[in-house]
Image 1: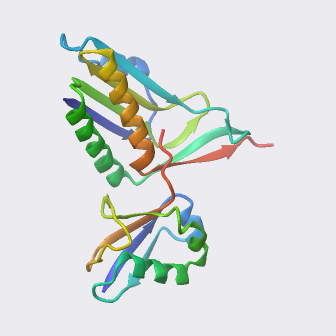
Image 2: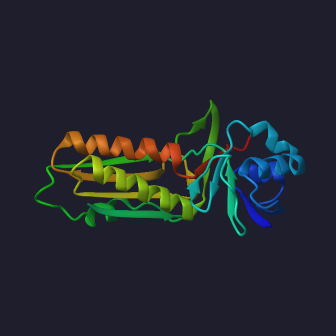
Length: 81
Length: 132
């Protein structure tokens, strides 16, 4: 199944794009998706420990089971204000 | 609790915001916080900060923060404006107004709102150094 992945802030520079589409297996977790993304965009690996992950508009952990059509967002720690 | 959230690429007009204040006779405390862009980031002189937001999620997360504020303190109203795009040094990027019966809860709610914003609201800033 397909999921869209959006990148924000300097993650766009690390990946060279603002959005990517990934094909993942049924019942794949965010952790599985992240492994695919680290292979495709190796520069993201350096930020692995501080990457924030959202599905839609809610934060999710790496054990979240993805569904067809999910929109995943990856970004660095937030800095509002 | 009245709530108003604005995420805008336009300027912050403090005078207009003050004029738009709907005072309540129940609110003994009105506090306003301004977050202002300093002229350096990590000791490097800058000309502007470029703010970026994941706006849909930012709105959702602010709503959740306001929900928590409403649960924890007897706040009459909260208005919050965050600018995105280029914000020059000395300009305000954030404006928060809290009205409450007493100052303690107004200050606490304002502090909580900003602390939580800095923890969960997806907004980022990119410093643009002064041209050498």
